[in-house]
Length: 275
Figure 1 (cartoon, rainbow, N blue to C red):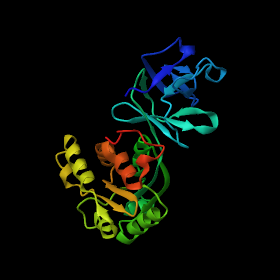
Figure 2 (figure 1 turned 30 degrees about the vertical axis):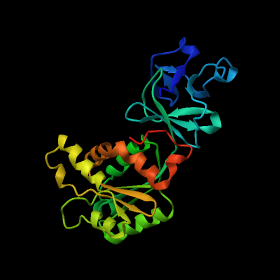
Figure 3 (figure 1 turned 45 degrees about the vertical axis):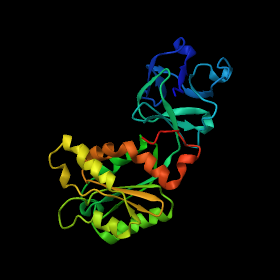
Figure 4 (figure 1 turned 90 degrees about the vertical axis):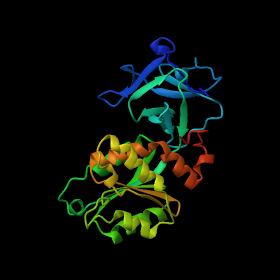
């Protein structure tokens, strides 16, 4: 069902396509015009003072926005806007296009942590670029990173960080590094030693989808496991490899987490958005 409609009186009526972004000052802009983005329920009077000078996202009456919720649009479910309850408006997460009658979903945030596994990184001898890249890509899928760490290629350290986050109720744990073939690459073995379940499809998709970038993609030992109610996914250690592999699994990431945590029946429910 097409549930989104844009209403922008200051931009002379409805627009079939609008580019939502921020300017250098960090202000929300629509087609380069500085204008806030608010939301209304279908059937509400949009001529009121609260909607004056704003781009308005019209949602169906049953749609609910959780604290910190995200508005995801498009067939890929790209997250463009994050709800700011105190100002009753949205803040731009990722620049992109919104169209009249675009498909839209309300996403609740996913509690996330990022772990970088690197001997040199843990000693401060190498700048971590893969961890921040995973955090950036995860945020575009409605994930809010609550914690991040760098540990050496040591199974006990890896397991300790994962256990701690799982006990805290972190829903998604993203790990980069330690998935190669060298003697110090221990991430898969560490995760399998504490796993309640293995989710082989994540690693399979990474290896299949990244063949378009390198014929050696099948050498990665990336895995995904479940510990308590946390989904833990291990990615390659390079920024490029981690990013490409993350994009390969975004189609099922949120559905997997919501199925695991039961969030699919809560206010973040987006009816069929499991992709």
